[in-house]
Length: 240
Length: 191
Image (cartoon, rainbow over all chains, first blue to last red; front, side, top):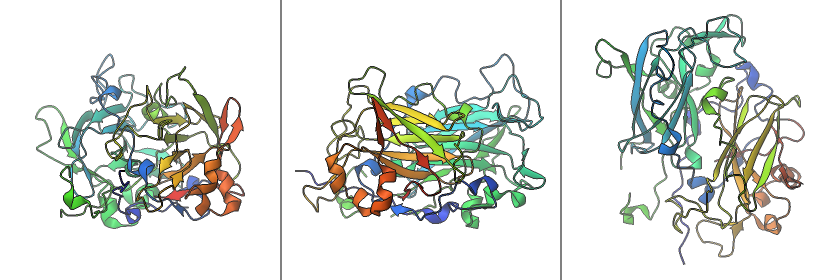
């Protein structure tokens, strides 16, 4: 009779924005009012979808391909590693990315920003991490864009990331920002992360080693998914 | 023991995710035609009772035998037919989502402290939307399950709010509305 002793995941609430953050105006009618109930981590929480190669097409790691011509804008490479909270690589995990084009316009019907669409850019990519948790994709530098959150509000340039890790507990949707963006100070979404160190962790760094001569600027961004609690069984577990 | 790293913060999915996150097969936890498959879906409402047209609802669940195709299931990973376990549906302009799935089996409660304790059949749910900076986690239970009365999660919730976690039968499937706020605010969980 097996004993169901799960390895649970450590609390990580302080890294994240609060549920209620009214400076982000559309949060006001959407953030739940009642406190969250505690959900113990059992089998359905420590497992999760393991989505891999089947979800990624041949050019999905290069957002500049797949159209008749090349997109406008500064070509960039974004590369890094997906790690768990103990620094272990998360191998074979799916990353989904999406972004605005170089002019700050999304290929979405609801985006009314009067900036041009680019017929050669959709802005969607998918990659799978390798055995060391590494990922890399090529795209163009997204533009900043205005929104109506407050007077003269602009979103800093960013790329959206969606990750699964290996457990329901690790599911993460986030945004990667670019270093030195002057729009950070007025952006409630960026500043909803109250811990300055965690906030800085959303900012990629320029990296000359990732930069390809005569071709594309390189940025590095590592993503950390929730780490596990140590369990009494762990020391005996050869797989770890 | 290696150094502990801080989790990368959550950020909003934003309003313009659909071209990035919508998969043609997203709503199909099981393929069309799977024996026992049914539709489950509903409407996501904001605090003004207005449908939320820019949300994405994801589910994760055990197969009909209560097993997971995952190495961390201590009973061993098993694959049930073409069962993916995972579903994803963006809401439509009327705030509606819909998934095709099968009813999961009950789950053994971890730890083994209470021998016969089981979690009643349920789906784990993640809700992302414009306006939310973090994922909202809830659960969908089924109305026609005696095991609900003994479920350790359901029974931990104030009885007045428990029903927000139980789908309504809507033959041949089920309906589960999600209320982000208000009188009928859905129970959301911290993991």
